[in-house]
Length: 341
Ligand SMILES: [Zn+2]
Figure (cartoon, rainbow, N blue to C red):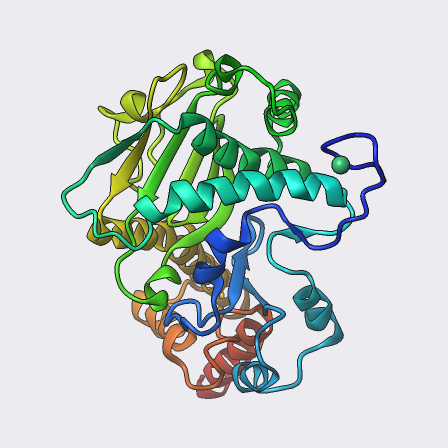
């Protein structure tokens, strides 16, 4: 395959992170074990409410055994070998050097002004280094669009972003023409705090959104496609236009304080996981009762069923919300109902 950046050389580079590793690593760190995520990566697909178990390559064998209560399957091992947000043979080694240069400039000049600082009381920061900032964040958007088929951005935007990354002599005017909104979620405390942040991608009504640990990136194709949407409290209607940089003199980064940052994560988990999953349990239980007993279960019985899923001691925390455990739990529950009648 030909490298997607230079479109000339053979794509010979393995393990290219399309979301910069130094930014996302602390969020996905096994050491900063999170009560909610247990340091593993869970993915909730839109089609099923089940949380698939997916352990990182660095996760130690013992902690896998402990969490799973069994040896990992071949499939899980294969998944684990895929490093988070990285790809093989999409870019060439020379172009990896271009990525590194953009990333290092940002890491050296901008990141120290954000990470590790208590920004309580600050609602925005203004930077004259707009090109360094833009190239870094637009690089994330472009690489993700190239590497992840679900992050499907318009071809014209993708082509323009490629030029911005590749052409060192591109005009500032072209770099600043892309509407770009960057929010910094001020993360105070130790590494554990970073595991409460989010890493992921999404397209919401034409907003191309990347949750990037303590940053959120939103890019738009052009001025006409800028649209306010609420993303777990990250955007505010009255300031959205102000924080959407385009043709700017200084790049403005919105700052969300440490307390509000946690509210953002909680809003995400509640909306994307909890609500969806609870509705699924409720509906499945009700339709199964209808099919088995010819009547809808009482609210109280439904609540008992759901509580058992959430608090039951028949599984480990890592397997609690998997399809496998749900089936076993449900069979056992209905078994008891049959015998009781
Ligand atoms: Zn290349």
